[in-house]
Amino acid sequence: MGLFDGLMGNASEVKQTKADKELENVLIPGETVDLAFVLVRDLIVFTDYRLVIIDKQGMTGKKVEYKSYPYKSISRFSVETSGHFDLDAELKIWVSSALEPAEVLQFRKDKNIIKVQQALAAAVMK
Image (cartoon, rainbow, N blue to C red; front, side, top):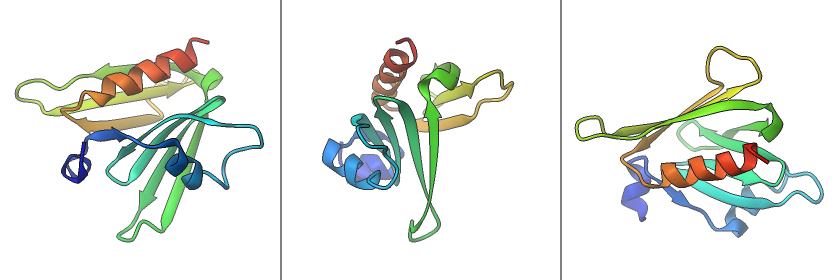
């Protein structure tokens, strides 16, 4: 996937070195990145301990929010794929006993939502 896909909201896989650089001040000693996806400017990162969502904010993206979800706190998740008329795919993640999802991530008609869901399932079901 190229730049155009990224601008349209499609997730594309990120090289581990780029994800490691983005998380150099967030990862604990011994924690490694297993898989990462970029969604426009934001990153969805799977480590061996947790899911980290990096939300770049503002025009320049200098303001960054790091959301960390230990896999053991993720109680459920759902994936809604895109259709013919509804081009958005959506991933929702719930933590503990929350009624509302902690995260709702939008994808544009994208096959990588399946990869993200599979990685999340593998991490949570350990």
